Amino acid sequence: MQRKLAESGTGWALYLPKDILRLLGYDPKNTVVQYKFERDLLKIEKVNPNEVSNNFLLKKINKSGNGYSLYLSASIVQLLELTPENDEVKYTIDGEVLYIKKA
Image 1 (cartoon, rainbow, N blue to C red):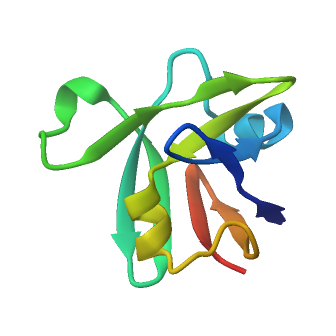
Image 2 (tube, rainbow, N blue to C red):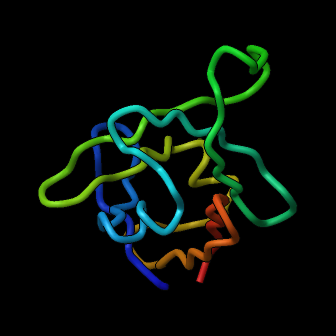
C-alpha cells in the first residue's frame, strides 16, 4: 500500500486503518513497537517492552480519528530520504512485521 505522511507536531504520522493493525496482530491500546533500519527500510515490529534494552527506539501506537498512527520523527523521515510534502511511503506486511520505505 502507498500512503502520504501527515504532519504531526515536529514530525510526521503514518496513518494505519484498524484492519491493517488486525492483520499485523497488534492491539493498538497495549502494543509497543520497535523501529529498526535495514538498508532503506524501516522495520516496525511488536515487542515486549520489558525484554528490550535501551538501545532500541520504542513507540506506542497513537489513536487518530477512526484509525491509528505511528509517529515518525523528522530524523527518521530524513533517514528514509523522504520529502513528506511530495513523497509517499510504501508499506508491506510480513507476519507481525511492518516494513516502510519510500515509494
